Length: 505
Image (cartoon, rainbow, N blue to C red; front, side, top):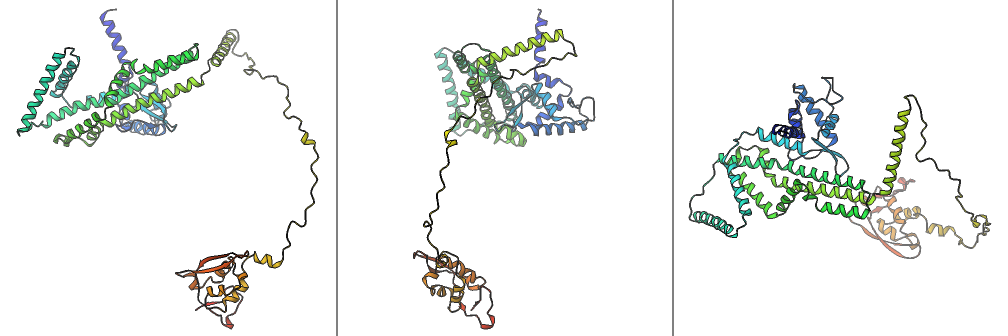
């Protein structure tokens, strides 16, 4: 192959990537606009039902303005048909722009793939008004090269000279500031240029983390597939799985990059310093020209780093749990037998298709066939079932004591007639109750007393209570606190059959 053939193959492979396919279609503007609207910097996962509704609304609005929008399968051929959000999301999942997964609660949700995030980051970078070559970008490159050159230097003497030069430079700057000289402030233009370069790097972080998640998922799927097709002993398979899991993050470039970033970001002091440095940058006067969304996104840099790491680790934990369940529940013998049966069925079907016609019918039985098993005895003989029941015993008439009317009254309800008579000749309800004989001062009599005093203003609005000493039928004394009412005997012409024949004083 010539050089041009090699370059053509390489360029064609790059153009076939989902990122560039997303940006090269006639409807790319509409799709990217929908992605940017639904998934902002603070939203990474959207429930499936909400995603379908939002896609329908946004695509319909763009279609009404005359924009060229993607057509779902149901809407093809009908220009005026309303777009189908579910069908569009299904097409975008097939194009590797969306991922459909399950949330911790079991609900379906969508998220952007690394290809879609990379396309959005590229659109953001191209839409920003900035110079491609600037002082801050060149200074960033020079500083990075100098720092890594210092780390790559094997000669200790050269390392010492580099450190001495840095110490002398920093000491001179410190002495200058201690003497009270003016601090050289950076103007707004240079600060904004530096902010733009930093924002470009931050904008690439979500797609980088998502690419690591996808690499981890791909590696685990490969391990699961190898595990299902293995014919080796289960112990050997398990040892190989554990070894590959230990080296998982070192097997791909994305994994190695993530391990390095993870070791760096585990330093809490470094993250605190990063947050403080971001606050200092936003306190500069140039930050007043930034939009609220730009300041919020720049301030959330540490949160983006933490969330990206947590998503990758959660993906590793989830897939490791899936593999563990697969290892525990996997039965090599059963899978092998099932695979053999399915292969035999396919061979028989292929032979029948070659020899049969379209109208031939072949009766298909159950697989496997119903087992011919005779009826088994379900219940054994129990001698107790034939035993004669024991004779019915005659009741003993002396078990229950004879009851008389007085005993029943002692354990019955309140004696309203006696209570009404006592209330008619006493100054207040408490005195009337205590004037009764002990056998008539049972606790249940208090209910009868309250019933007779209902409607008496002194009783219903009493601010204090008075102890009432009661006597149970067994002779035990119990004290209850209850409101008291002042009473006067009812006049002869006011006598009637009502329960309360008393009037308030």
